[in-house]
Image 1 (cartoon, rainbow, N blue to C red):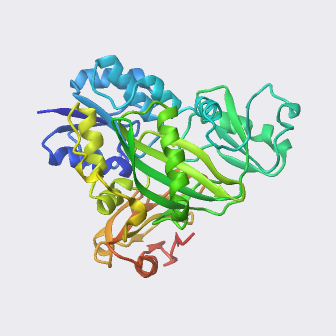
Image 2: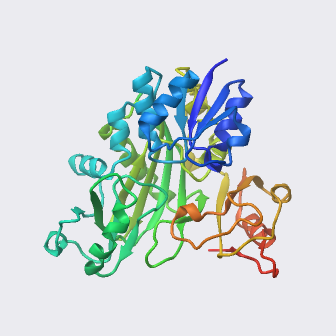
Length: 408
């Protein structure tokens, strides 16, 4: 029986655990939490941080893992590559490629060297001064180089605030530098694809709908397929293929965040993973390609069935999909609409929660405050009425009967 170790044990990794079990594999998760949500579905849980490569290498060696994978999360992509190299296991990418898609300093340098459009930026540290950032136009966005989930990300209208927030940003990083870039007023889209022998197939292009907050930016509240920017498909495809070549990616998943505004298309960031908005669910429905199975197979050194990729063009799809990423007001829920009830609603195909009854919901500062998700899909639209029906039916009630669920 093959053994696979999955880095991360949240709802974003639950489908991977269930898929591995359905194939008869012995599935272990590595997660620093004492009781991660996916643990009850796995054969074992190793309590180790996915930011700790050495600890994860020891864990993989101890269980005799045949393969390592992750999905829906950025930094463990590098950890998975380091484990695979240390234990001579299969991997879609090497550690150098993994560093380039998990560290924004390296990523931005590759953008610049390969004429991949991106916003102006500076790297700053605790000894930097106002003169070091005077060339940037406000507003600016301060980001860690190697974090995830919008932790430590701040939009600032005054450059004098940059050094006030810098320590907070660096607290979410293992680096001594941070990224400061110009804010670009724009719509945000995501490109999900699969690379097979250096050839890219774009599987979905979605609108990434964001929480409208003046400081805590980049927090996603939903994904919508098809994107309203499908008219830019040719340019999106050209830039995506340029990214594949520039980052030396030959096989595996690709996830790109792009910005579209008055100055045209800019690339925000690149990842070599399945996205964290349950893209594995909608990609399979829209394209017929099981990207989760493909990632698992490649991590075990098995061939991937690429037949569904032939002649697929997501810009010609008649399907519509919405991934609702739910957030709530601070409080303590006394009752939550059961998942089983949501799954009875029209076009709802998947749902799950990150909180339980009586578990305190805290204020929204980054994506870790996400309450749960609901995926809706139809072969032919429109999906909007079903989204509205879901939003009217979903409730998180406190002990006074107030609905904490926020439609953002």
